[in-house]
Image (cartoon, rainbow, N blue to C red; front, side, top):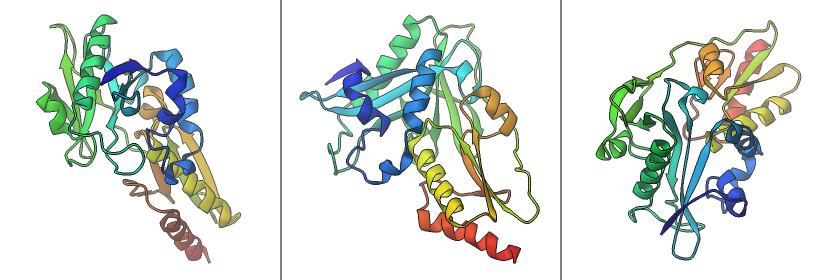
Length: 261
């Protein structure tokens, strides 16, 4: 196994989070690539774990926390760490140390860049980026919001702990219309899929539906809108994890349209 910086050779598979076998990720559009191109100019770093055949099996991305959806300074924040765990495509790479190797590489790079620590977010549930995994690697919880823990590992005594940005967002209503609002972070493939499905459904349901896109790419946007990725239909937040099907999103919007009659 080898951990390497992302190179043009592997960009395409990175843009679909190593799931190039999946038809679902084709719905995500090119938002991830756009985000990557912009954020590399602001300090985004991406590393891949390659198996003995040079095949990417895991990835990690991290950036200065000042460019993220959390409050903090002089830290880096991991926006995603993922080891391919599906039987389809390249197969299941879990339990082979790739995640640990990626995390250690990010820590070393963060330290070498003179940052004072590395932060990450984790879920209580074990199905994706569990917070307990980071805790096993020496990270400590410093904040929690909506079931998502913010953790960190300081590298210096004067490092200051990060925190979540807290602000509630209420989309504006439009008389006689159903308003579908997508807070689009572009960083997450799952969020991009939800955005594109909602955009398509809104367009199909005609001019009684107004679709709005608000890009949530960094701290300033999150301070204003209070979320780093969400979908609202007439001000009500739609549950989007894991991504609901196009049919389900269509039914939610159509149900609101019928109530206009």
